[in-house]
Length: 150
Ligand code: ADP
Image (cartoon, rainbow, N blue to C red; front, side, top):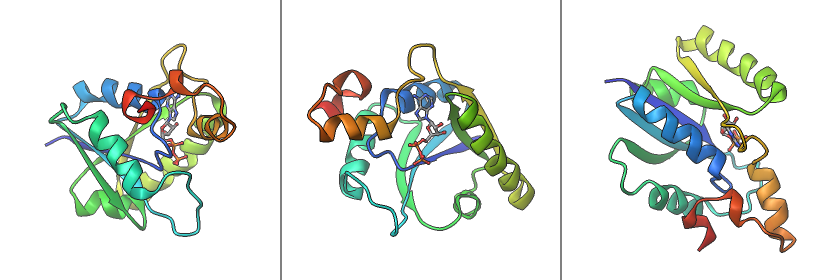
């Protein structure tokens, strides 16, 4: 079973995430969308809400499971027997950041990270920008899936 974990805060899930997840589907038998819980981080959406957005967005995709985890991502991968992480790369900043984490995860537990480059036209989308626009009453609808728009 080729199982991958796509970890993130998903605060909220965006069309950028959806694109990477959907493009990851042909590569894996199962993709686990895992919301990392970090008690010291402040979120706009509650964990319940973020879970609901993910579950509803992918309710018709049997290869996708949604869950939460705490602690090291590689420990969670081992626990559920996933050998791969799936991540998206928008730009050089993402690359530099992800490179160190990917190398560390491989050294620690031989968990391989599969990186997909953001699709053209979606690389400007980030949860941070979406949250900022939402909080100031701007137009965010074109950056998020239907379930977040509702
Ligand atoms: P975190 O909370 O870990 O910062 P994010 O939700 O920001 O997580 O991102 C999770 C993953 O999704 C990362 O690999 C990030 O690069 C990727 N990602 C986020 N937005 C996009 C996008 N617009 N296109 C491609 N990948 C993206």
